[in-house]
Length: 66
Image (spheres, rainbow, N blue to C red):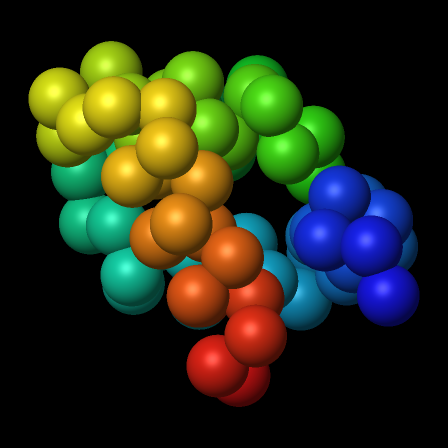
């Protein structure tokens, strides 16, 4: 399954796990993301000062390791 589609379809279930994984994310950040892959990449890049490639790799790893 496409990573973006997986994130969108399971966002409600993944939201709490994302907050555990990336503790710097606020509820407002997660509301803004609303299951959108690119939005999550942007927020993680900003909060953790990561490159786009590193943020994408972390998200993909998070989604495939559950």
